[in-house]
Image 1 (cartoon, one colour):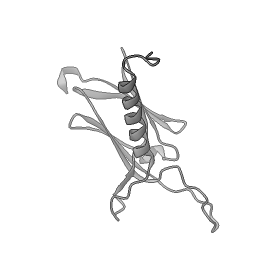
Image 2 (cartoon, one colour; image 1 turned 90 degrees about the vertical axis):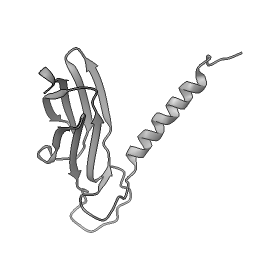
Image 3 (cartoon, helix red, strand yellow; image 1 turned 60 degrees about the horizontal axis):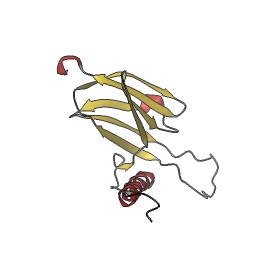
Image 4 (cartoon, rainbow, N blue to C red; image 1 turned 90 degrees about the horizontal axis):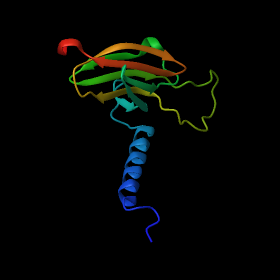
Length: 136
């Protein structure tokens, strides 16, 4: 008797792929010695409604004035840096799980889009995208 239904293998494969993508974003990656090297990607939630597409990007510890948002080549690109926050005295770091360093997150877009609004609140950047009028 098939307890999980006929598509259980496909659903399990999708779950594993999503977990692998989440883990990849969570680990720091060394991509070179320069300060411009990208070392992490923030997680993003994407919601679509009649009012447009809303992206919620988790950016704990990133100063709002350091965040760059731009549209380029059918993609939304968000970048900035998160510095390591260490106590002023010398000490031993026991655990460092929150990513730090420069990040760039590129989200592919399906058509001409413009940024209707963006705001930074509670460590998250919220961006609302709407279709561009006349293919701007």
